[in-house]
Length: 275
Image (cartoon, rainbow, N blue to C red; front, side, top):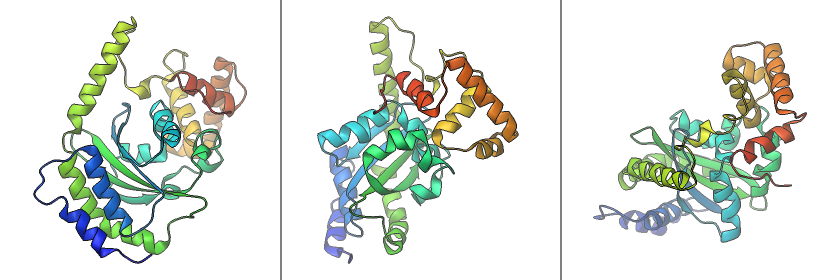
């Protein structure tokens, strides 16, 4: 597509002299800037801090799409998302999903059970780091009927990144306070239910299942889409040792497949997998 300079300049001008904007107002500015260069079908912006539940800052989904792309994602599957792990590593820049995904991601149970529900042909993300261990990811999505972003599209997005990052750091500078408020709200809910103090979401899945730290590390990597070989390289152990740990996990949990492993994982978040 050709560059729409009128839309681009108009979106940037909308920020001049405005010290702050609501999430919706600023998200609309980002959408207009990006859409002046490329044509995403959807945009969603998440903020991440450690293993806490991500904050949905902006999205363009209808209510039904919101269930899959936001509500279900926030309930636990975000911990298996390559974009989330890239944000945790505090990497900067613009990346395609296929650049970041583990070697077995596109054949993993997570991809088959959850990710395919999105119906996406491609996802491209802007990765921006803030203070307080917070990262913001602006995800641009293309559905299968639209097709992937072209090389020209991707190069335009990379050139756009410094502008996007600067705006995000200005208008979403106070996210630490919002994460703190979210934790406080979750704590009050749990107390009303007679539950213990809240833990970050990422600490939840295997806490009650008596897995060792090493076993939990390995099954998390399995569910993220890493092969036994990839896991061995990441953890500096042999492939054979990885397979032994996987067999022990399956025995402890009384399961025999990755489908059952993912189901157990999601149930511990209260998020049921799709059938």
